[in-house]
Image (cartoon, rainbow, N blue to C red):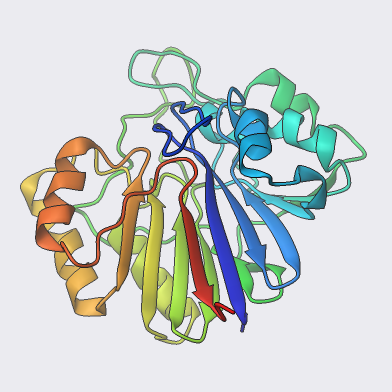
Length: 277
């Protein structure tokens, strides 16, 4: 269990402070006790700028975790590795496969990011739950149990849109803290309910204290929003900070449903869990 976890939103669609920049993407800087981890890298347009503006030294990063292989989460990988070239990179085996959207446009990891993973990179590739640093874990493949949740797509493995991509590489991070489990989401293509229920299994039912990140509720219908809110309520999650791909409608819905638990999470936002001395 971690004693302290600091989460800084490094990249996000919106900028939340003077001198910061926004882009369509997400990245989180994590300080887990004595360890520094980068979760996702955004598109690569604002990562370095925002890190400098926030006084975060990317050379301290010892591990980079990729939530999945889309460009807005992997595009800054090569830039990050210029500062922390010795970092171990955690990714799902499916993360670097070709990925296309509903229009047949390439949305996979850019070539410069793939090249950064050439022989010599310290790769940790698995679809199983794994410990990134002590007390901080990646879920690996998340089981899809609920029919009301989808990937947020449609997504495809080819430009001709002949082969559907269910984004099996989607994974989340979770940390064990004295107040409960802190969950970090990249895009949550596996679905919020599927993800949180699976983390409950992995942690033996420990209480979930916080959920931060992209929830991909952008096109969620009323039924899905209601199921998602019901689970958040039943788990008594105290910190709810959806951003990036959540969508304005879902953000408004969740803010209205949980006004005392809802937090904005633009670039520059800082969260502290555990020992706050």
